[in-house]
Length: 256
Ligand code: OAD
Picture 1 (cartoon, rainbow, N blue to C red):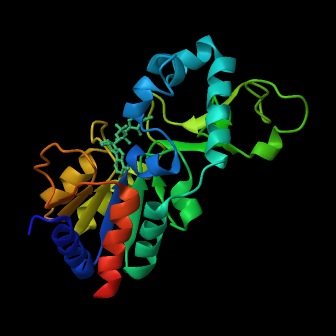
Picture 2: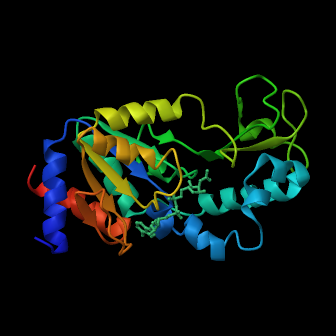
Picture 3: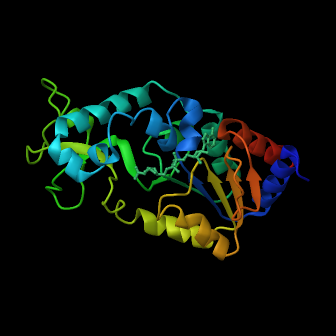
């Protein structure tokens, strides 16, 4: 069965049997909400800047106002977009099946806004802010209301030490948020189905999770429009997440 509905049916059958499911998502799942992927971004959003400028502690030190403003603009753009049909279908999958752990590389909050709970954010969250200097030891998240009063300053002062705030996202050369990868790794070891969606699989350690799941004999489903051969997946659903995730849910609900 090489047609897409046959592939969807195979994926749905695996999900139906699953006791534990790990879902790993990347930028592609938010594309249909209007957020460019990182690959798109090389020619779009990021095109006037280098990764080093916008996504490293050194870049922030050199020009904190420019970096803060760039993320503030992205945060504003995020507020204006909505979860797509794929985010919503995935949240529904979480209600339908006994144990679905969503792990995302995305810094947006579209999974949560669609209704997914317990989402692990491997690369942090653009909606959160922390002290650049870790003035209280571990990164302390700072509510926007704590710095929103008064005239806008870029970056706003940390309410605890008065020095720079920064977005709570992971930059190059930085550690992942404490304990988050460990939980994701455990979910990869424990799952019997691993659903990977919208990621190029080029950034580690996130890209290790489906490999770990496969090594522990999980059935791997990949949702990605890319044509390239995908030797890891048992089923590769070639197409957009916003169409194929609802189709997968539909197949599952029609024959529970
Ligand atoms: P990429 O931009 O590397 O890859 C996006 C993937 O989404 C590609 O494989 C596309 O084929 C696929 N895609 C495009 N449109 C899609 C759609 N409608 N439905 C499903 N898939 C679609 O993004 P990530 O793999 O998420 O890290 O990138 C991983 C990490 O690289 C990011 O989290 C970021 C970046 O450096 C940090 O910022 C630390």
